[in-house]
Image 1 (tube, rainbow, N blue to C red):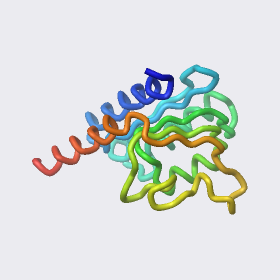
Image 2 (image 1 turned 135 degrees about the vertical axis):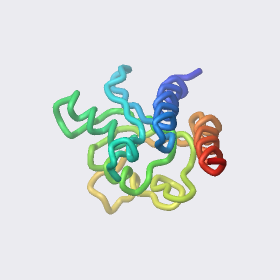
Image 3 (image 1 turned 180 degrees about the horizontal axis):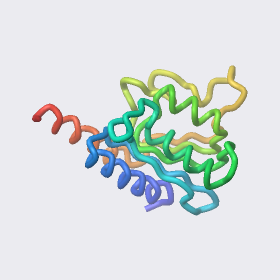
Image 4 (image 1 turned 90 degrees about the horizontal axis):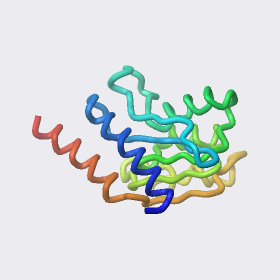
Length: 151
């Protein structure tokens, strides 16, 4: 198992915790210099907050830990970020983005939009890797929505 897979497995733990709380299972962790500095999971239902996506929750925590808004670290997230999260990733100066499965309905890294690499913006994420533990990440989402349909 490589480092990206190891950190994505930790993000998957966060995704499962989101599902257990009734939120869509997306998890994120932020790593800087080989150390976990922040984690987040979808909390929209729990916090009654439309902006409480896993990435935003993790970025807020990382900024507090670092004492600055420029995160300059690696963000691991189980699903390709949406436009809101991609914008937050750009604005927080994330150095590297690693995501699990694509987001066919709102993907803003490669699927529908390319926000994090758009040359018209003042910052771009210089290193993006998609598809890390994609099957496991997608399986969490499929299981969650299958259960919702059964209920």
